Amino acid sequence: MSIRPIVLHPDPRLKAVAKPIVAIDDALRRLAQDMLETMYDAPGIGLAAPQVGQMIRLIVMDCAKDRETPRPLALVNPEVVWRSEEEIPHEEGCLSIPEHFAEVTRPAEVKVTWTDLDGTPRQERFTGLWAVCVQHEIDHLNGKLFIDYLGPIKRGVITRKMEKLKRDLARDKPAPKGPEAARL
Image (cartoon, rainbow, N blue to C red):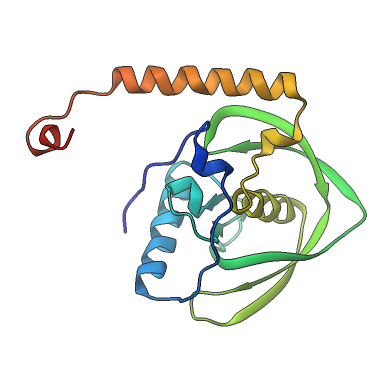
């Protein structure tokens, strides 16, 4: 297992629709484990494959609180098949948009179908934070970010701040040495 770099907004991969997964194999299981390790390290409660540069329909999540037993989930080709009429506001953040948060209103409950890493079809009704998280991560698979729920001015401010952060990170990155330099 390894921690993978997280794609930062703005990046075209975060606005693209991810492709369905057609086969579950050891490479996919390794990716899911890497994503869980990356998510926990960040720290976060959910992560979608496009956030680590993989344009496939895979998400991982674990919304267990500190005193609860961890419940890591890997959802292959997840789909919301039912939404409650009741909605709840929740302050959301995103590992691809660090340090930025905003209130987003979503259905309070959702029913989701997916395939697990053993190839078994699953279905679960999620509520509260779990519902918010699974909807947020499925949005990533559809090229939608939580800031897309915001007005254009606030979304623009966050995007400009992220562009600046990416420029600053690029400027502070040390120049490659050895074999890395040859690949430039």
